[in-house]
Amino acid sequence: MATLISGFRGALAFLPARRVGPVLLAGFALTAGSAGAVAPNSLSGDLEGLVQQAVAFEHGEGVPRDPSQAADLYCEAARAGSAEAMYSLGWMYANGRGVARDDAYAATLFEMALAKGHVGAEKARSAVGEYTGVVPDCLLPRAADRGFAARDSWDTRKYLASLPEHKKKVVEMITTLAPRFSIEPRLALAIATTESNFDPGATSPKNAMGVMQLIPETASRFNVKDSYDPVQNIKGGLAYLRWLLAYYQGNVALAVAGYNAGEGAVDRYRGVPPYKETQNYVRRILAFFQRNDHPFDARVVAASPALQALKAAGQ
Image (tube, rainbow, N blue to C red; front, side):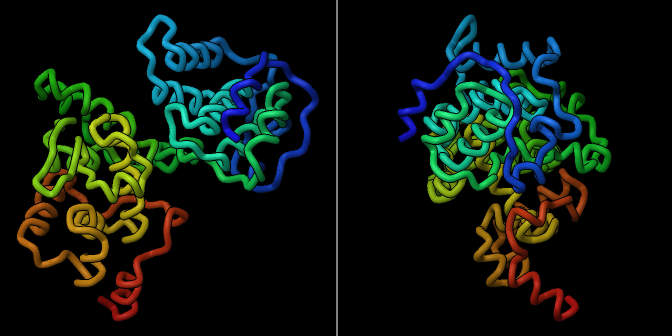
């Protein structure tokens, strides 16, 4: 079905907006008439430039082709109100280009573009199934929107300057991507340096791979197709860490113990498992991060039953 979308990429035009479902309206101020929406015929030069950059990375026009980077740029522009970016990102999800294929995400993005009058969106929308209002993670409120940056004043630039050149690019990726997953950069860096010392090609004896040392099961769980691609790997690791922080309601020690030993082991022992490796791992992360709690998004997953039992027992 998704291959049908490729014929629908048309020129951008703005028509009278139609009503969008309540789930979409509740989540975003991007549709026509919503507070804070960008008027379709008054897109700023910066926003137009952002879309043009995304197109260049998508097609390799003057820059190396990088669909993943294109998707990130389209998402940023979609957040700012660009109908063309909404449509283009929907097309990428419908076809699995640079992102894992997801018709539900595509339907939402096409619906958003259609509400702003994009002429190609209606045909594309009809080809991807039912609209449910679910959205890609990149369109959810970012960490900065929740004040995470204010909690952690650690100087990432100073840390970056202290590193050898071959590590700087990976560290820059982590510090850029972490807030998009509601993760404070210092915690993400603590995980990455402990796991692989920022080596995209690292492989452990347990077949954990890449910067964030994802085992195949975790990579599959978080839609990582190539664990040795640093961007995919970092995004997968951050998605898992965000899930763990929600599962353990911001308890950093339990979340990072889960990252190392699996949440099953943490639940079974109702705390950091008595494994020397895991206990040393947790100590090292906390020494770098220097806080025991972290903001979390309760919408990601329900709290761990083991954590709930501990709280009920007053522990």
